[in-house]
Amino acid sequence: MSIAKGFVAGLAATAVLSVLMVMKQVMGIMPELNLPKMIAGMMGAPDSPAIGWLVHVMIGVLGYGAAIALVARPALGKSAVSTGLLIGFIGWIIMMVMLMPMAGAGFFGMNMGIMAPVMTLILHLIFGAVLGWTYDRLTTAAARGPAAVH
Image 1 (cartoon, rainbow, N blue to C red):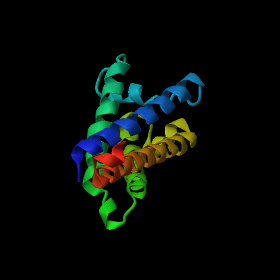
Image 2 (tube, helix red, strand yellow):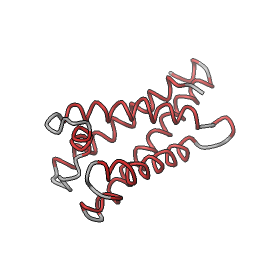
Image 3 (tube, rainbow, N blue to C red):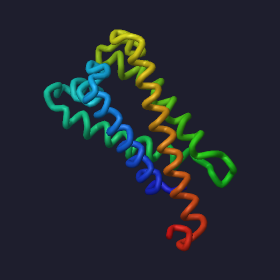
């Protein structure tokens, strides 16, 4: 287990997810599903999306990074990618049953329509796959030694 490698994997996954979220907004796909704005609103700062982005990055790097480091067991033959997908799915469930209602979007975000849970599930699974893949690469390279890094 390496928390530092988990944080790096969380950073990589958060970067990919953030790019996808910005692309979604720029393309005008479900503009009402603006997660950083929702997070900022829940924190009492609806006009400060930077706060939402900061919290989004902290959750991705620290929360999910620690989770993959604590749960993934590549040495036991378990795929870190499948672990990352599971972590992403669990995060999606938590978001759907706790955070979406708290943000006023309803259970599973259904106040925004069926695309809200579908789109957020896809994004969480992409995030989880990148999280697990990155963690696997980092831990596999470390296990092989310094020569494997080059």
